[in-house]
Image (cartoon, rainbow, N blue to C red; front, side, top):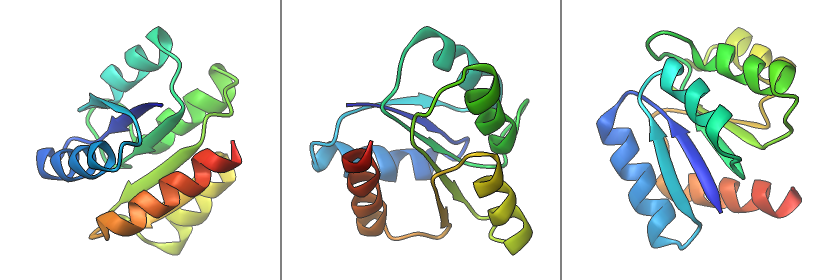
Length: 121
């Protein structure tokens, strides 16, 4: 499985990469900003995207819109963000996110949600 992790927090990237790799879930590619995320999404097909909302250049919500509207992709998307306001969560789901996890988060819960989403797709 190919996973694109879009987050500018190196600690979060390390935790997510470690847990998903340890669980044998797949290869984790990383984009530290929205511009790189768009580039990587154009270059490769991913089985899952894990996205922070607040990133340089393009927000996670802009990237979700890019994936759904411009790329016409139905790749599963998990939003992983400290932004947990109801309005933001609802907007994320409205534009096409499949799941939303608020930081701080349980790495074990993330693994379960990833496995569940991948099984459905």
